[in-house]
Length: 98
Picture 1 (cartoon, rainbow, N blue to C red):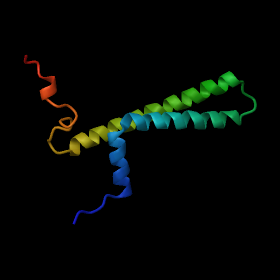
Picture 2 (cartoon, rainbow, N blue to C red):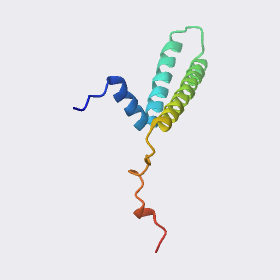
Picture 3 (cartoon, rainbow, N blue to C red):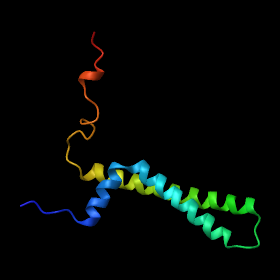
């Protein structure tokens, strides 16, 4: 019988397949959370609040990209030697023979 995947394993697999979407969602949630936090600070100008939100989101995005790089490295080390891009790039379509 095939064992079902754990919740962590299914989430990890989704993140591996959708790296840019994951980083984009983290950026969006980071900037939204930072704006919400900064808006509760009464002694700041609006422009400073927006700049702080952008800086916080940028730091979170860099952390997410570093995490995606770690996941990619981990997958390349533990993957079988099969070509992972074979299903995306059909060889016949891109041949240079005429």
